Image (cartoon, rainbow, N blue to C red; front, side):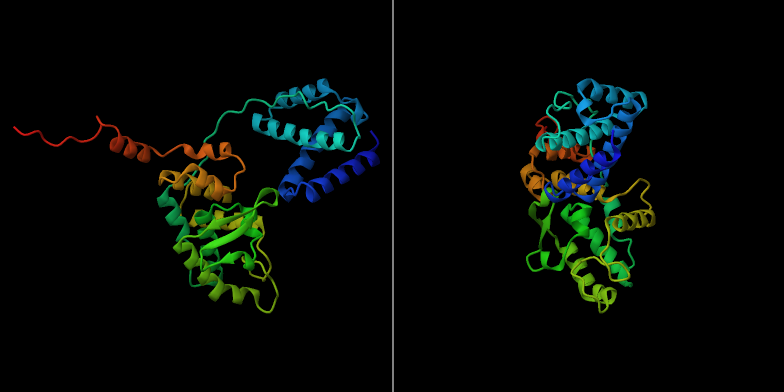
Length: 308
């Protein structure tokens, strides 16, 4: 397999993902890593060109991954990367037959999304020291992640012109550059206002930067830095579990549904293209389930004392 030929194919495919598919840097990186794993497998089998790959080759690769102890979810992700790559090859007429077209993904075990309790959220949100510029920034950042259900990429890329504090709304661009409006409650608006008025001017200095959330040097906060901030305050709050940005998105959706929000409203706020993606959040906490049961079931309600 000519290295220069493959390098050129991959370069053009990465450009396609970034420019035409609007894929996030995270997706581009993962797809590239997964495809390189597949190429290494082909080399080990002495397959020298993409045209030589057939459905039996793909099935052999999946069997190899299983033998290596790769979990089902990772195998499904690698297969998804292959599907995208081969659709691109077909579109560019680099190959004439798609060897992945009839290959099924492994059946995944259903996992309910993890989420924080309201008490844990309160501890997390009240952890930053509001007497410092970074503390004000971090309080606003945490409030928005929980109040809006934003993806970390949406938060990190947020610019000043996207925010309307008067209406409590923000315009964000999610997956595939799809625009949607997210809402802020009063605590989030107050925290963001305090940060913008008191903290951000100190962080930005004389630099020109439209980013909402800045690091200590006046540059835009990265997704990785946001993740580190969450870990820091989870430790301060004494939350004995892994806390990451998407966990607050799960928590946002779960708490809304527990509070009686309509599923389609939650779908809109999360920016899900399909209601199926939102339905995973329809699980409820035990306390909420018990509350609904006691209120709704006619034989579960407390009966008034009968007159003697």
